[in-house]
Structure formats: C-alpha cells, structure tokens
Amino acid sequence: MALFTLQDISVAYNKQNILKDFNLEIEKGKLVSLLGPSGCGKTTTLRLIAGFLQANSGKFLFKDKDYTKVPVNKRNFGFVFQNYALFPHLSIFDNIAFGLRLRKAAKSDIEKRVMNVLEIVDLKGFEKRFPKELSGGQKQRVAIARALVIEPDILLFDEPLSNLDANLRVNMRVEIRRIQQELGITTVYVSHDQEECFSISDQVAIMNKGVIEQLDEPTMIYKYPKTKFVADFIGFKNFIEFDERKDNGNQIELSKSGHSFIIDKNEQIINHSGKTGAIRPDNLIITEKGQLVMNPANSVFGRVKISTYLGRSFQYVVETPIGDFTVNKEMIEPYHAGQEVILEIPKDQMVLVD
Image (tube, rainbow, N blue to C red; front, side, top):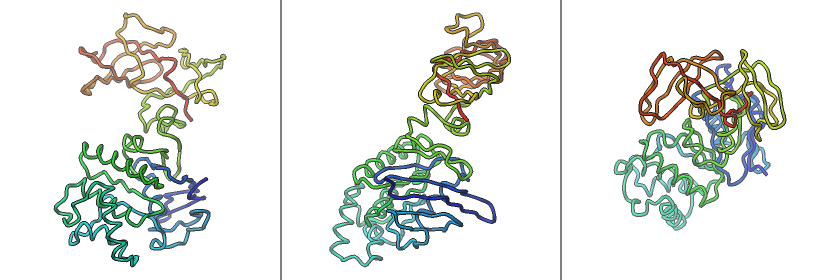
C-alpha cells in the first residue's frame, strides 16, 4: 500500500507546464529516485512533496490524508539540500539540533537525539566543530543528520552529491543507502546521475517533460527500457525503425531496406507489438570485412566514419545501408576511418521500444 500519492498533479510557471497530470505512488520504506535531464520536473516534484510550492491542480495524499494544502512547517518531512544549507555560525551540534529547538523539544531529548544521529552518520566527536572545519562529505552527513534528527516520515534528497568529487560521491551514496535501510525510512531522491540512482534505489522513475516515462526496478529499466527516450537516456544509442515484423514462435523477424534480422523474444518483447529496435554500443559486434562472422543472417556491411579512443576501448560510428551505428570495442589496433567492416546484431541483445 502506498505511503503517499501524487494524483493528477499539474504545476506551471509563467503559463509553461512543468508537471502535467502527474501521478506517483511510493510505498513505505522504499527509496525511489527521480531521474532525468535538466528541466524534466524532478526537483519541482520534490519541492511539491516537501510543501515548498503548491500545485495548480491535483492532490497530494499522505497516509490517506489530503496534504495538498498542508504548509511545510506542518509536514514532518526531512529535506537534504544540494548545497548543505548549514548555519556557519553554529556548531555541528547546534546545526543538527535546530529543527528540534523549533519544535520546542526538551533539552534532555535534544541531547539524546542529536548524539544518536551523530553516531548513525558516523560523526560522533564532531559535535563541537563548525561547518568550516569539515570536508564536503562531512558537511553532507551533517545535513543528513539534521534531516534525520526530527524523525521524519519522509526523507527528501535534492541532488545531495553534486558538489562532491567523484570518489567521495561513491562513498556517500553507499552511506545514504546504509542509513536509509538501517532506519527503514521512506525516501525520495533526486539526481541527474544514472549510476548514482541505480546503485541505491528500490525503484527509479525516469522523467521527461513533466511525466514519468518508466517507473521500475533499476535492473528492469537497464535491461528493458519501455520507450525510446528511456533507452537513449540509459545508453541505448542505436535505434532502428524497421519496416516489417513477423512473429515466429519464440523469435521475431524484423526487416528494413531489404535486410532481415532475427531476435529472441524475452519477457519485455513478448508483450510488445512495436517495430522500433534499440541496442547498446557495447552489444554490437564489429569485425573487419573478410573475417569470419558468428551470425551472418544478423549482419550488415558498413564503413567506419569516425574512430574515437575512450581509454579501455575504441568507439566507432559506422555507416550502413540501414543507418549509422555507434559501436564500442576493446582492441589494440583500432579500425581507421574509411575501413570496411561488418556489424552483427546478437539476437538476444536487442529490445523493442515505444
């Protein structure tokens, strides 16, 4: 059962729709990430849940109660900001205790709860320091502790790791997941970083222009994107608009410009009637023309247009009679521009998208 629900929410700024008939349900104890490009509406959704802004229409239900007009100070939700938002003149203890003092909690209760949450975020012994004396990762943990100490019903994160360096981001996302699972707190997490969201979430909502294109477990989104937008966003850079489709038992024959390809039906394709195929650059097989091909029936001749060195591998843009393809391959001696090659599409690596 959903802990909270956004029903037919619409939000507009200067007559421009940010969210349109938006719907989202989140179950108690889950960590759900909102992922998408800038301007897709993910931060607007988070601020709406927090109570920082009001919808033009629709409802926000929390524990089956209408929270649509409940002001932010009446919602027991914790919010972790992108820029930490710590008070520089207050000690770490006083920064964390700030929300409890606003709620007029007893002094003994404040002491107990602040020290407890400092232990949860692994900052015990830092209570007398000031924000300027902490690293970026430590400041972020203080911000998390301040959100946790009020014992919130929901924890909200607005791109909390964007100001940290790459190594620290990896460490902090592990910490965030540990804390969330340890406390079992329902969490909504906003980020534009795919790896970050996939690594910590129970579910990910891929957003585009104010709507959710797919809400699912990270592994399902990664393997079986439902739409062309989702597929492109998570790395399926090759798309083929086939002309014909024939279903033959456990396989599908797809044709374009006189070239036919056989693909296996899987749990995603079996209920999909579309004719748009998608495949990742890493899953295409590229070989030099004249060499042995594993599956000639699923192959097409091409010519290398662009060769790019990626570090571990080379990336090629290959021109073929059915369109250009991007393909990655680890190799010592790269193919050169103008070289004739063969591209093979493994029959178990293509998905169909809307």
